[in-house]
Length: 124
Image 1: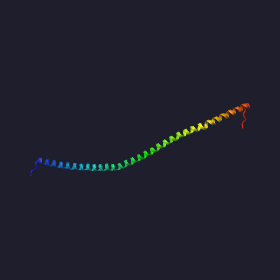
Image 2: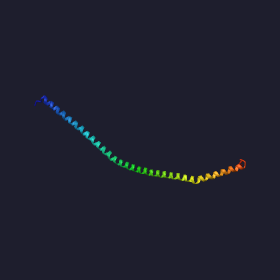
Image 3: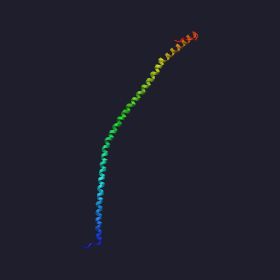
Image 4: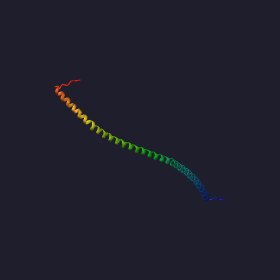
């Protein structure tokens, strides 16, 4: 059997094509393995993220409840401050003015007495 130059070239091309297909197959196999690993990683992140988001939601809900309680406490403190301010004003109006009048009368009496004694007061 005589082999022609074209047959030898065809045989070499067929072997080269078979090697190329074999190499591409291994590259595609490795790419498939990489995609499988990426898919597993995404699944793992998803499985860990959903409970984390649920926990964060409950934490934010609890924090909001505490903030609402703090708002109520702040409102109560503001009311208490206003009531204390009104009570102080009432106390000053009720007790302070009569005390001022008594002090004024006492000063007037002291001035009158010191005027009768010649302006000299004795130290005790």
